Image (cartoon, rainbow, N blue to C red; front, side):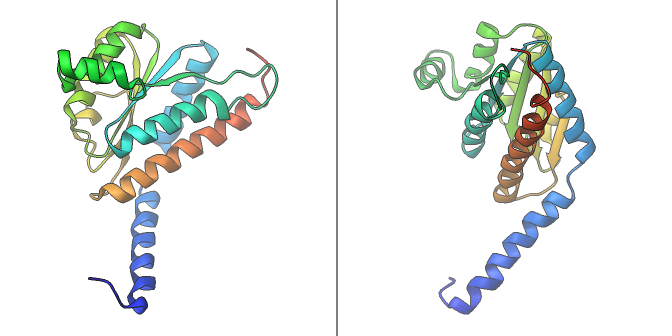
Amino acid sequence: MICDRNERIPFAWAYVERLARSLAALDVGAVARAIAVLERAWLDRRRLFIAGNGGSAATASHMANDLAKTVAVGPGIAGFRAVALTDNVPLVTALANDIGYDAVFSAQLEMQADAGDVFIAISGSGNSTNIVRALEVARARGLLTIGLLGRDGGAAGKLVDVAVVVPAEDYGPIEDVHLILDHLITEYFKAWLATRTRL
């Protein structure tokens, strides 16, 4: 138990150092490939579907907000057609109750997604059954897929078109880096869309 205030600073530094190591190990080439997929989606006015569980569900909502609203930097510049599959609580609970929690994301893709749309899967382990199932449906329907993953990427890492993997074991740093990736991508598109005027 940490109760001595002299232990708090070393504890804080230890976490910061773990996070820094996770960031330093990130494959920025994979980040660039994910951005390229999103550029094409914006140009083609494709929809983005984003999903995750737990803390990753919060990141999915945050990312959908940022890509729809925050990147729309001025008049005549539209953001992405982005939605988090976690946000319609009545629909998620109906699907969980009537079909099963494993289908809460895949069933929504079956309802709404078209070939050429993009599915962004966020998972610390890469092994969440509902994420894996959604990726299988996305692949079958001709969606492009991006994974924001952790550890070794898990089963999801083998299913996505672009895997951005945070090679850490603990969920805290993994989820921290996923949120940083959201903000990195958002900042990129704020700059990129500032040069465009298309609705």
